[in-house]
Image 1: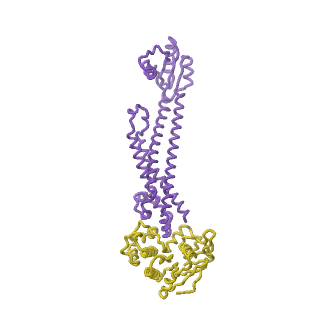
Image 2 (image 1 turned 30 degrees about the vertical axis):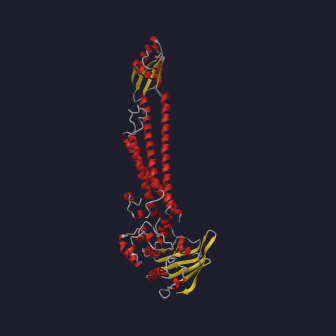
Image 3 (image 1 turned 120 degrees about the vertical axis):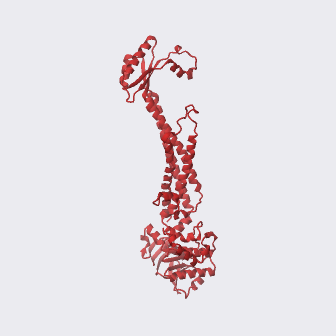
Length: 225
Length: 298
């Protein structure tokens, strides 16, 4: 699914990632941890093709990203669902319209996907908030909206950057449960978090591994949960 | 233009909803386009009026000439008869008539006032000559006049017509440059407006990129909005300018002065091109600006 081979990235002269080598298999569940500023978000951005590596190789869905055209990158982004801590929505559109946005930009017919859209609203428990604007939502609702939007295109992989950072424990668990359900459906999950309790709470629910990013290097933290 | 121009104008495409219907410079494009269209219509009118004036001088007056005979007593009458004979027998001369005393008095009245006697003035005899469309052999007529009426001089008006024609050409050139500058300013405003709209919607663009939107998809939403604002703004400016021209004082009210500064006949169709050209320019300029901007922010 994702193959990093001596991958590096720098912001100017400051190296964030150095010689990162890791394989993420299709259908696997990974936590990505590490101290603030370690490069978690940078690594995730590379995984959803928002950043390109400076050195080494990065293969996603079997394709070397440095060889992709602008159009191919756009097409590949549609195969990756992204959930941010600071969810980015179009605030003038309703919850339903925001969830449908990936379908719109891909030129899909909304009417044909309406049933799927309503199922998703129910799945994230937001059917009664479908016509609300993003600014009217709580932190937990915003995260669930982001998750629904991330999966509307039926992506092969979900990349989540601190999705539980702004929500309470109970809401964090609800989000994790949704991610676990997606993983059981065969989606690859890469979830960046510094919340060890969240990581521990997955034990016994789904096989997961913990990747630790420190000093620009990524390593398996040893734990296979 | 997403394939269908009508759909582009009417909207309703999902991409039309992605940009919020407000913005810091939302009014800028429409207002500036309106002002530019207003100026453009007036410049166009001036250009057409100058064109008509140039045509008048170059065509109508080119077909007239004056023969002036400066002599006294019997010599004046003899040379006048000889000159008339020469003129009337020259191919290309349509008519040759002595300008009557009453007409000469009328010409001098603005300077000398009424009630003067023409006999007290040493005035030359004037012959009004009308030249046929095919023209006349000027060299031949000059030689014949010199032989038959040595005190006669032939004036084909070129001495004072040429500088007027040159001035008219210069004025038309200046109007054309003004029109071009107006178009350049309009395009600059559109580009600035597009950049402003794109910069103030960076968050939306980032989100759309994240969701797999292509540059063309993102650009379309901005381009359509800017193009329509520019077109409707220019349309409003054109209507105002045309209303101003309709209510422009008539030739009778201006005693003939400035009477040409209006549109006539099919000329009224030209201003209709202004909003169309404004829309087309806005479409091309905003599309190029949007794609350039989107390529820069990878």
